[in-house]
Figure 1 (cartoon, rainbow, N blue to C red):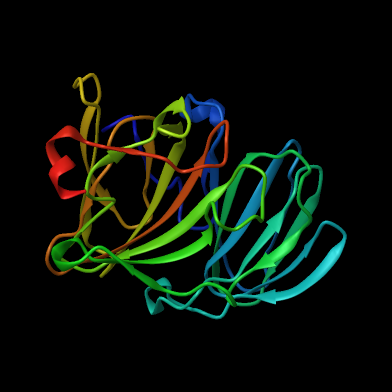
Figure 2 (cartoon, rainbow, N blue to C red):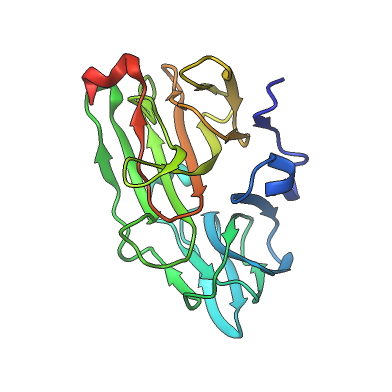
Length: 264
């Protein structure tokens, strides 16, 4: 199995916990909870900021000393409605109580105390087309560069129709040389529809020192420490992924792979 592929370590409770230490990098963290109605989870952010994404279901949140009420309204991620999210800065506590069976993603990166806790979405998030033809996919931007919600995190959702490519044309963001390119680590949390399907993600560098072609299944996470990282959804299986990126600066600048520069 590829060292970049992280399978869930269960079907209930905390099923993913990727830290900078376990990933072998410096910035991005990702965790995922699958809760049953009535169950509760609580964490402290410590030195990190988090964006809590209601992937599916509903939960009541208390965070940073405030009651945020119930977040979430899509019961299946492939409804493609805008997500309900909550930004919680570093040095805060948060708690969620599941109102229905739910899936909560915890996206994290170093926090600087520069932003207050706030709701993100569903207002202000619009499903937007990117690409065309067999490169068409649909984006829910949660906190990208134009949204000044947080210190380090860049977070987005992507829906790729069956038979299409995504994160394509292939590109990399693995050097700290702004504005030409930025260094951003990245995680991909994948979902498939139908859930028994699979998709492909390739992670590769120009010099071939890293070249992994990974078959991903529903609920798995792929780490992108460097290199290009396109995804393909085979005919008959729709692909969703939740991206988390972070690095030394909160800008997304990338360079296309040499073989596809003519497509840019």
